[in-house]
Image (cartoon, rainbow, N blue to C red; front, side, top):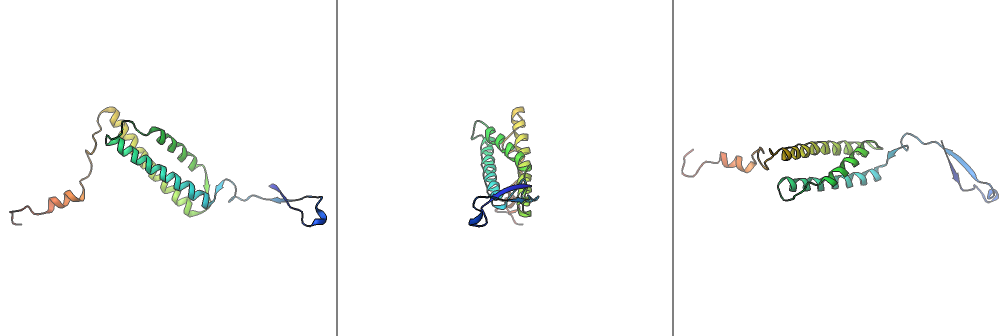
Length: 146
């Protein structure tokens, strides 16, 4: 229990102070509220998307160095994110989705960096064909009858 000091009840008791025992519940102990949690998740989501763009630029050869400082900062932030509880089920759902997205991208980036170090990474090779190439394959060629 935590004892909080409150203002005197009336002017006659202005010399004495009133103390009220307030018991902290499970919802208020180490749990992030929806407003603070929403801000924290929005900031983390923004940082994750920026890191994703930076890694894409690195893997496509537009950047010389990988964004390792941002990557390590995100690792630390996601480790801290898993240690905190959230007060609403909506926040817990958003947190679990953000963590799942982070884990997928992290494993992809680590695999691609390992391939680059080994010399087996080729940008764009092995990607699934897009919709435009599929349409071109199915379109009849000029001069031929179907």
